[in-house]
Length: 573
Image (cartoon, rainbow, N blue to C red; front, side):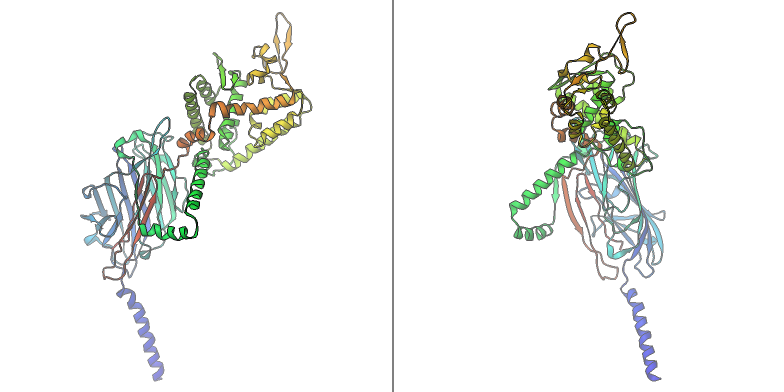
């Protein structure tokens, strides 16, 4: 009996100690169930930052009497430009933080007690020195900014956060001019919702209910540099780092492998990656998966959606304007066009722009005009694809390409093959093996080419030219009185026919586009820009212990991006 009593007392004491220990080791421990961050890009080259935090303090935790909020690295700001409140009550104790690269908000009498909740709001205006040039192209410079919201030390937070991040672009921009940068570390969709806010600014919004209060997420945008002062855009690289962090990783590697081999491999991979990246001109938002197939795209628009090479797409546009009798090729090397004085009424906008570009005699001016045409075309396709599935749509048009070749290949006579090829020429060129299939289909010959083909190749001389190029296929042309004469299709040996088709694309590659990577890169810079990595900042904040002097914590903010505006913060005190 006595033994059982002693055991009971021991268990009771153990339970009491277990209960008392967290209280004695009382520290910050809370949840952030809701958070919203708004970054306003102002026309004076500064940003305004707003934070909304909803805190839920743990039942046995230290009172939340201070909230530390990280500010962008390398930024300039004044405490006098910062205002804050907790549950609508003004916070007057705003100081530079001793523990994070930012500020400390003293909640004072309105501190959030253990088990309690509260909403903290902060607004910082005139935060500067945050923009970088994102690209320099032939038409317009773009500026960039990346922003990493303040986060809390992982030892002091729990649960998920419903986080909304909003970038408000400067006034005066259309929804087609700015672009977002895919976020880093983000658990939600890469592509933001896009709209205009109450001030008629373009708004990009990322939202996720699966974010973490200790998550390190980076969001970025680029926009025409003309809307902020040039003096507000950094032109020099700034690199700061912790040598022990860098060399602690690099030295062991250098001991195991050759220095030159490592750097050679890095350079080779970087060059290859950069070259591949510049050919990716399709903006991410076109790849958003909606629902259903977008029918009714032209072959040229489908080619954009498939991200086909630019020289192929330009050849397809050439086929289109030639078939509509708006132009003819007068020379292939270098490629020159004769544009008709009176143009057909059914020309599309990109076809008109194509013809205008070829009126330019200067090669550089022509390339620039063609790039501008392609940028506009990519944006048009993006608008048409809103709400539709890119994956399903691409599969749909791939089937059209397949059927187009089947119709040409299965034609029973040369005349029928010419007719089928005339209808499907722009689709067949989209096949990845079009050169091989062209040579195989046309064979050794003779081949009747489409009625309009003489307009694409001045070397074939021709039948169609004698008709003035104005008679539609399958009809007769009047020749005085009631007499008529029938169009004679251009007749070529098989090998010559294949060479004529393939040579049309090659003429664009060599004589107009020049370096395909460079040409496409000028388009990618506008439609799918990548942040230029011109700065690297590594810093860590010191730990802040509990009010009882126990423990400590730290966080680190690491940014390697153009326009890096990173914020790093530890937990509340």
